[in-house]
Amino acid sequence: MKKYLHVLNIGIQNNLAYRFNFLARALFGFIPLLALLSVWRTIYAAKSPGATVGTYTLAEMVSYYLLATIVNALTAVHDDDWQIANDIRDGAISQFLIKPIDYLWFRLVLFASGRIAYFAVAAAPLLALVFLLRKYFVLPPDMVTFGIFLVSLVLTALLQFFISYIIAMLAFWVLEVSTFIFIVYAFEFIASGHLFPLDILPAWLVRALAFTPFPYELFFPISIYMGKTTGAALAEGLAIQLFWVLVAYFAARFAWSRGLRRYTAVGG
Image (cartoon, rainbow, N blue to C red; front, side, top):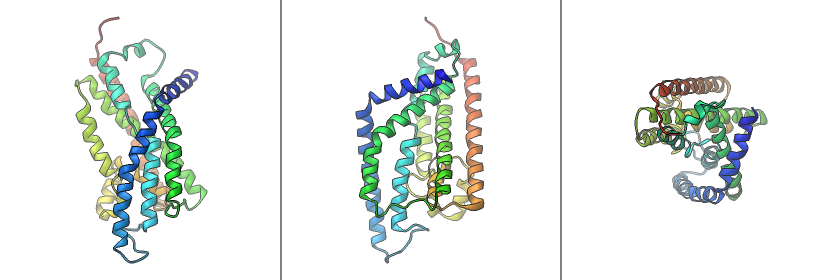
């Protein structure tokens, strides 16, 4: 455990060296967010006061996108998949094959350090934006709901990391994994709820998506926070989310073990 805590500490220090990049990324990330909020405010302005889209009032819709930005800052994988693929392609993983350290856990700890450093830098502008839009921001129904949201948030981060890790493992078989990363990202962007809340879609499509991993990468924890998913649906959703985390974890382990059979490295 001490070695992974040391990796976490070093990872945070290394990431903070790029704190200006993190700050710039966070600030420029507000541009599409503000554009989306402007679009939705225009849509609601054309409706009668108190009107809803799906089950969302204007305040809830603004809260959804603010929460999406926060959840994304805490759980999104940015460069980890590229770094893992580069380690495989350049032979850098050889050092982990002769040391008492698990590469998957090593990369997971580095992912955590990156999220901690990013959120530490981006927290101030995020909180400032929430404060400016505070009249639209919806709080969770109660502290129990908030606690369940935090549990789901951790599962969301693990799911995103393990899926990215699996994609990066393709570097054992192909020279360039960027195409696969972009394809999966395109599906994630729409089917995870980045573009709009998934429950404004037809009910049959929402139900179908619920059995895929994508909604649990963003939409599901937000729906918990906002009180949109409760009771039996909440228990079922958490079970499915945990299921996909376990599937992704074991798939990541399998891909690593199979990839090592093809791995060769030369030099010293």
